[in-house]
Length: 297
Image 1 (cartoon, rainbow, N blue to C red):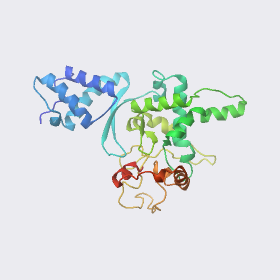
Image 2: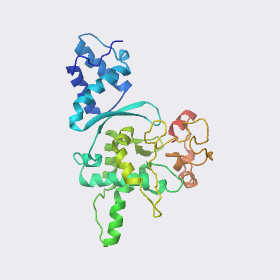
Image 3: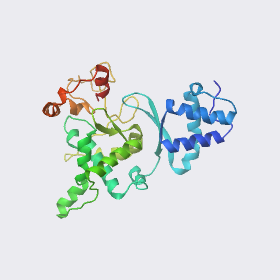
Image 4: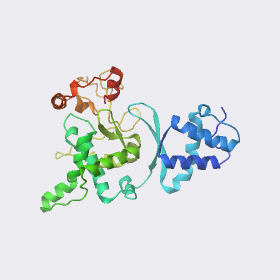
């Protein structure tokens, strides 16, 4: 169909679309269709149905929006959701430190909590050795609020002083997690694990690499933040499930079928299984096969 993307320039329809995007921060083609349909119906003085909107129409609106956002160091970018493979469009900061940007809406203690949460996800006990979880359970995420920041803890050990910066109680930490989830920074799985959303991965990509891909004591580069060699985006789950073959396409190493990436790196561990048995979780009604597959990382 003829493009609905406002070829005549930056119209009222484009302004309305940008306002809608700013209000949501994250869109997919399906969630964008009714917005574009409403904007185009107003602009063209005729009814445009959501099912008539194409990805080309969305791209036209985004291109026009990005031209307006560029002077503000903002940009609408896209990536594939690692679980659903649906393309996700998000409004991200194009230049400055994304954690600094959070200071406009979060308190100093909340910013420190976010950093501690990221430390736990990417440099915590579930991301050591061959285990690459890059997520955190709900219980651990709440407990993070009571622990010192990794970098802060090392400084305190040297100085002998202790700081309460970023210390959140259980209720405050829980509220913060809900807020980050509602704002599109975190996703929560059915098994109760928090991980970074596509928006967060796009926004924090540079910061994550600079912070966690450092050298060890022997000068060897540690790549805790890894990228897909196909789409070049950060990948935190499903390294081997995206390939039919169990052999790495680069180093040709055969996968042993035991070391997973994502929350399954935790849920398949012996310690996790033992804890589930002790808690009586296995006595609860079992999920269907389809539900179980959706839970797997």
